[in-house]
Amino acid sequence: MTKNMGTADRAIRAVIGVVLLIAAFSAGWSGLWSTIAAIVGLVMLGTSAMGYCPPYQILGIKTCKTKT
Image (cartoon, rainbow, N blue to C red; front, side, top):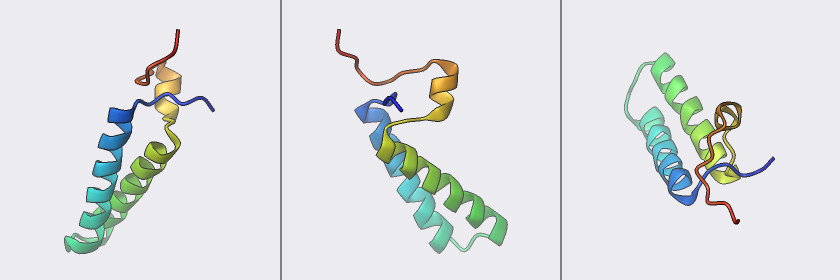
C-alpha cells in the first residue's frame, strides 16, 4: 500500500473525523444519524492515520508530494 495522501489532506481528514465522532456521541442525534457519523468519522481517522485512501487509488488521485 503506497501512501497517496498529502499532509494537508491527512490533517483535514483527521479534524473532520474527530468532529464527526464527537458529534455522534454528544449531539443527541437519532440512532441512525449518530451511527453513520461514527462510521464515517472512524473511516476518516483510519485513512488519515494510514495515509492511504482506496477511492484515490481507483481514481488515480495522489495528493502527496513525490520525490523525482
